[in-house]
Image (cartoon, rainbow, N blue to C red; front, top):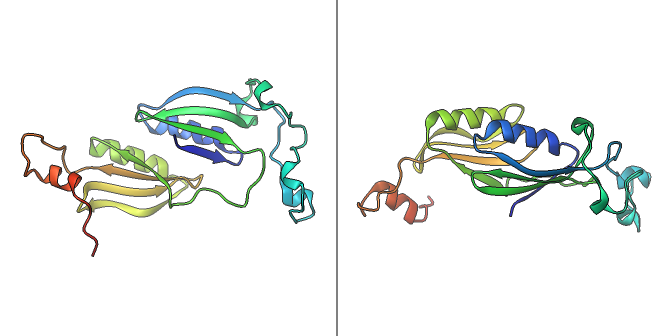
Length: 186
């Protein structure tokens, strides 16, 4: 199951994904208590990460995360855990309570297959807002519409509107051949 760890923007990402994908469902969510902050080991150690800093708790954060309850003011709280379903795939989402030097990387992305050109453009336009294209939308050999988008949180999405659905009755169908064959690299 894909796991997406944010650094203070998980609720904002959940809201975007719920608005972007027509079938998205928030299955569950639990927030840290209001006032919980993200711990920055570098700032706490005067810019360094000395021994023991990884075991320190964020100021004001309870040690027992299982005892945390959802709070009313979601905009001011961090996501302890959430499950978001998009296209039948469940995504685990949370805010890390410790600041990390790493974030999302394009080497891992979510693949989304759409049925219509309208759906392709609506999803692509929503995800690229305040983000960027890693591959511009276009007609490629493998899809009538394809785009690789990095959203404003750094998460990458490959949106694919295939040329056609496979036809099991026609073994020579271009859609069947394209899906059953590895790409030819030049």
